[in-house]
Image (cartoon, rainbow, N blue to C red; front, side, top):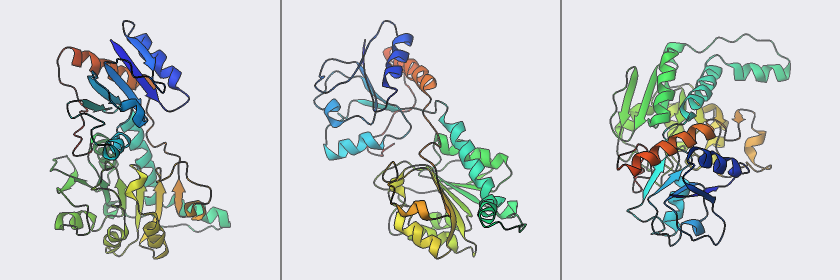
Length: 324
């Protein structure tokens, strides 16, 4: 069995060594430009189009992450780059869900207990006790109830917060008010989406990045949050393409949004001259809300390859038309 690996970071050698150790009978190699040799499985993270072009014989491509938008962007740019019969498989979790739940829970509690405002007071050397936001009315809306979104939502329920979730199809989750719809992500929002947004104090974005969901965090969405009479908070841990950056700055200026925590951006690293750096109500983290854990990911992929070799179904199969 031949495994072809491409990981665009300095730890590529560790990924190769990990797969070689767990699959001693496999021939494991890193892809380099010009390599068009045979492979049974490709394991990739943000590969160049050249790696995927004119390939035959691959049984599956494993994406080293939950988001497959980089691969699908290559397919949209060059239709047919990913043959329809080729299985595209993403990581199910591999330790990411618990990290994401920690990140979001910390940030929600930080806003509910107003620690962001205390940090601003400290910078001004001010001493003013603030009344916490009432827990029972501090509604959190989670956009996207996939594997990561579900764990985030359930963690917030465990903290005693009122939680609602939005998904493409209906879901029944204990303690979570569920809203859904096929195409809510355009200029006109349907009644379900309006109802989901109404009264939300913290909007958490965990949607997949698809043509239908891009720019969903925009002025219309922010205005619907603000209808409750209280400014809302935004947490974006999905993709930078979901956020219309100028609309967020305008919503902050208009006090529709009280503060935002952003872990993802349209351009990464965030350029030094970007206006987000100088906006004190925006908290920036460098795409670390849920890191891919190498050992856990390798174990998962090895198990999935073994299942595929036996003709068994595996989790994480991507529907290319849907984008996730």
